[in-house]
Image 1 (cartoon, rainbow, N blue to C red):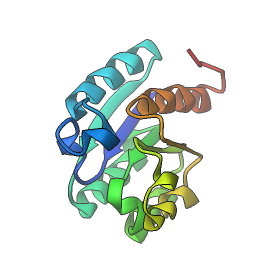
Image 2: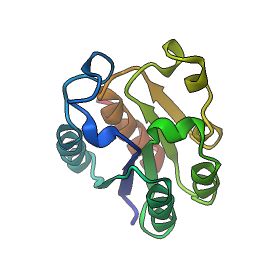
Image 3: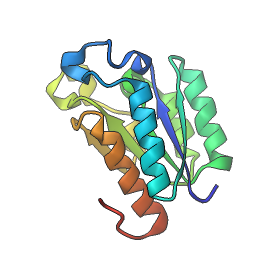
Image 4: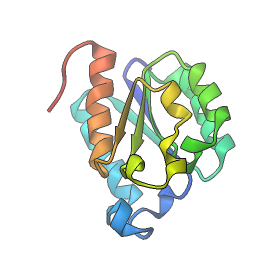
Length: 151
């Protein structure tokens, strides 16, 4: 558990690479997962990944992380702007939480400017494309180990 990180992805992210490539790019969720597992290994982290189009599935994974993970990286996608349930679950998690968004949400529709998840997140990374996941892994490794592991 000490170095286990849960990376949680919300609705429609299973369609990365096919969905609005002008916003989200051409990389697939499988590409991101492979990158995160490899980088996690380099950083001494055990990375577990999960994607769901259902709010309850994400909440269940956060509950599981309370017993199994040192940190959470979450891209809640559309649930960012609507889910008090995800916020409540994250508030019960003791480790660091990093919120990731592929797009720059503040350059998009005004309803995307508010994030419930940000109320709990220790950091928010937005607008860096899929590289945001790599940045989040470096940051969460630093938070867990107490040392700068930027690369």
